Image (cartoon, rainbow, N blue to C red; front, side, top):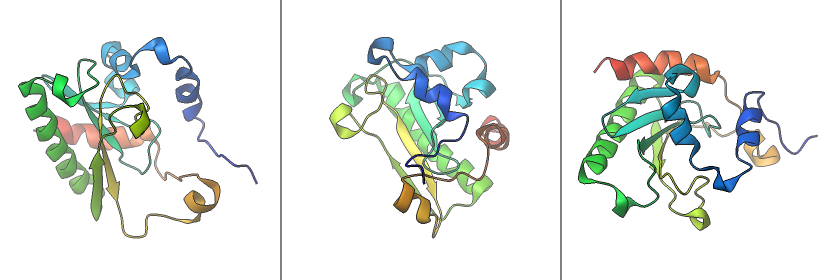
Length: 163
């Protein structure tokens, strides 16, 4: 049995993370201008919401400032307020569209704390369901996602645009 199983769409992500000096991939996605291809479901004045392209669970979103910032203290007051407002909005939209029974929300600051992209802080919003863990994470360190990211983007983006 293989130790790691990866959905086909993860290869581009895995290959793009080779150079730690390359800067934030979030800034590149934001500048690309194609929100559907970049999985950006909402752009705010100071922050944006993006689907995690290597999600822990279906509906795994990230909320982050438009500009590359690695520390909470470096955020402006406007960015802090909008980040919190967008976290609340993520919970509301995911509750409406996906009906999870709970959420994990948080951020990792610094590489030693688990931040994969420490130069651009980002909050994770992970919807959770009772019994959403199965044998794959335990035995194979693999997560099974029942929905393609493009399909999920199509379900979530109109809800963020509606307000």
